[in-house]
Image (cartoon, rainbow, N blue to C red; front, side, top):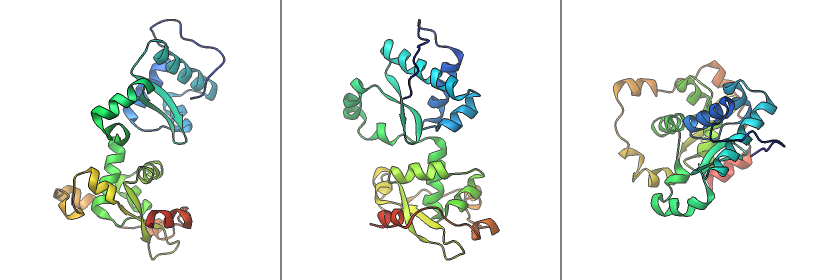
Length: 211
C-alpha cells in the first residue's frame, strides 16, 4: 500500500475520498488497478494515495477486521493479518478463492464455451476481460489449452482440474444445464477483429499452462 507523508486520520469518521475508495474496493471484490481506481473515484494520483493511506491507517488504528493491500494487480481489501490464520481454519480456501460477479461470469463463459479465445470472451461479455482472464489464470481456474488456427493464432482457454475440484465437479459434463437464453448468449461467433488478433501471451506462459 502506498503511504503519504501526512495522515488525515483524526477520528472515527473517514473523508469522502477514503469512503469512496472503501466502497469501490468492497464492491469490486478483486484487485483494482490504479488507473481504474482513479477513473472510478475521479481522484488524481496524489489524492488517491492520500485516500488509500487514510483508509489503511483508519483500519489499523481502530482495529478493523480488514486492511488495504496493494499487489501487482492493484488495490484490494484483505483480512487483517492477525485474523488470517483463524479465518483459514474456519473457511479453508474460501478466503483466497473469493471471486467477483464479473470473474464468476467470465469463468462460466470459459467453462461452457471452451476452448475459447479472450476476444470471444470479450464479445460475449461486451467488455474487455484482460484483467479478469489474468486473475483466473493466476488462481489456476483456467489455462491455455492451445492456439486457434486463425491469423495471429490467439490463445484458447479452458478450465483446469482445480476448477473441477473446487466447484465439486468430476467433469465438465456435470455443469448445470444452461437456459436457452444463456445458451444463445454463450455461443462463440468470432468476428473479423478476432480473426486478425495477435495474442500477446508469450509462448513460455502457454507452456507453463500446459504442464
